[in-house]
View 1 (spheres, rainbow, N blue to C red):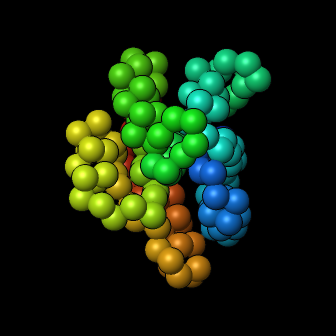
View 2: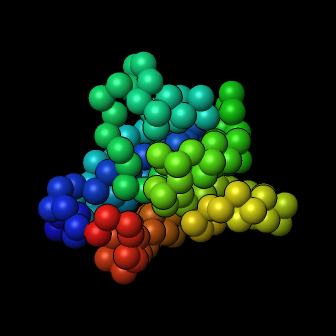
Length: 148
């Protein structure tokens, strides 16, 4: 299945420094019925360079959705979220915080910065895959996004 609005594969940007979580996310998206491309960056500075198409990401695709971990090196997920939502060119891209933090302060801070949703990563392998598949299904089959 292709991206419902454009007929092209859905573009995901995963901002995650844990190789195990990257592998699980890639596996979950590969099992999907929706055609998709997954780009991965491993820290906050790299994420912003990707999104702003700065070197070495000048040809980076514009993501349809961003999966953002909060615990990142060099620039935290909350700092990245703040910059995304403050940038008129990026602020309409849905951002899903997908993190191990269940701290109320992180949840509140994320929503104060206009995150689209906050999901705690399950520890169970099968549950993690189900969560990623649910995120994909929700954002690409149920939600109406700008430009669609």
